[in-house]
Amino acid sequence: MRTIAIVPAAGSGKRLGLKVKKPFVPLGGKPLVSHAIRAFESTKEIDGIIIAAEPVLTGRFRVLVKRCGFRKVIAVVAGGRTRFESVGKCLAKVPASAEVVLIHDGARPFPEKRLISGAVKAARRYGACVTAVPETDTVKLVDTKGLFVRKTLDRRVIYRAQTPQAFSFTLLKKAYAKAAKAATDDSSLVEALGKKVKVLEGSCRNIKVTTREDLRIARALL
Ligand code: C5P
Image 1: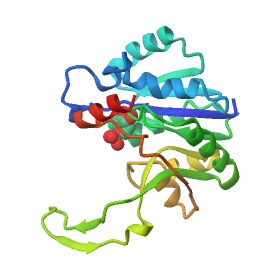
Image 2 (image 1 turned 60 degrees about the vertical axis):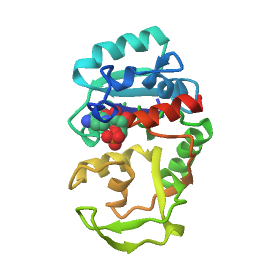
Image 3 (image 1 turned 180 degrees about the vertical axis):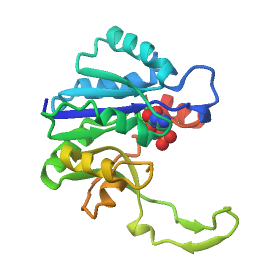
Image 4 (image 1 turned 90 degrees about the vertical axis):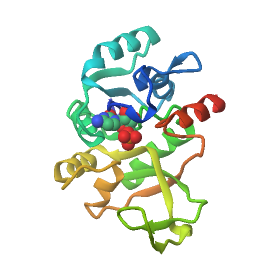
């Protein structure tokens, strides 16, 4: 097992405001989370998959893995209170033989093969890779209350980070062990070690389903 994909799919999913738990919201007749898992099942570079699920949902996830015939899933772990904690718990299950660990949000149903393969390749070459899209809006830095503009940023150097992100296993373990505080992505922990992270241009289709509007967009993108 040289290359492992971690899929954080825990958390409350409250912002979606639906009764159905987010990973199981239907998208094209299949549970939302199954789209991301299927992408890794069918990418030859990925040898094993580890999923973080909300603790009460681990059983349902195991049923889903069986029903969908996902053969690469090696563990479904109970997630933590934050994404950072959930990924940390998955990292503890990564086999010692792993060289590269790729992380992809379960809430992003459309990770393109080009991004999965590209991120793994870049992690092998540079140690760390983040997929990200160049910003097209003008970006303002505002005060903490969001009331007044502090500064306008130069959008030519602003990219929006997505997943997949991929890393050398050794480097990622170190980044998590040394993390001073929880982060909202994995790249930032590696950056905090002073390591360079390669940018791979992501895709506007690779959206994260957070709100109902996102879900409508995801359904339209199918
Ligand atoms: O909260 P955010 O939108 O940044 O979540 C990104 C990903 O992290 C989602 O796929 C979500 O399921 C996952 N997550 C997690 N554990 C948490 C919170 C979020 O695995 N406690």
